[in-house]
Length: 81
Image 1 (tube, rainbow, N blue to C red):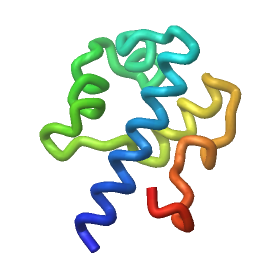
Image 2 (tube, rainbow, N blue to C red):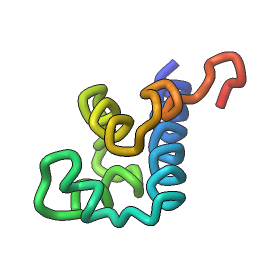
Image 3 (spheres, rainbow, N blue to C red):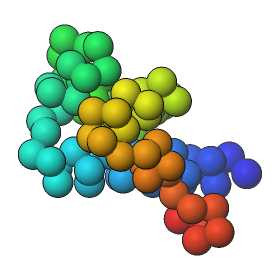
Image 4 (cartoon, rainbow, N blue to C red):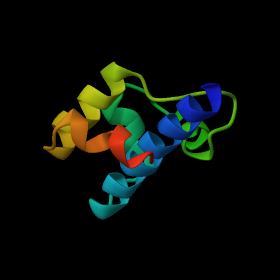
């Protein structure tokens, strides 16, 4: 199950990155949206290093900023990522 959870979290990161790039938003700008001053946190998430992931508060802030629904950032379980 842990492997499935990691794959799920990785897919969320990929979806956020896709939406970020589609909008030409830098890692710094996304970091600012989440309340951080440096893009380092976003870089760590996007490389999936150090066990860092987006939390539900992050996904909410991203969805609001990108004018999408939180569910749009999440993979469909039925599709098994």
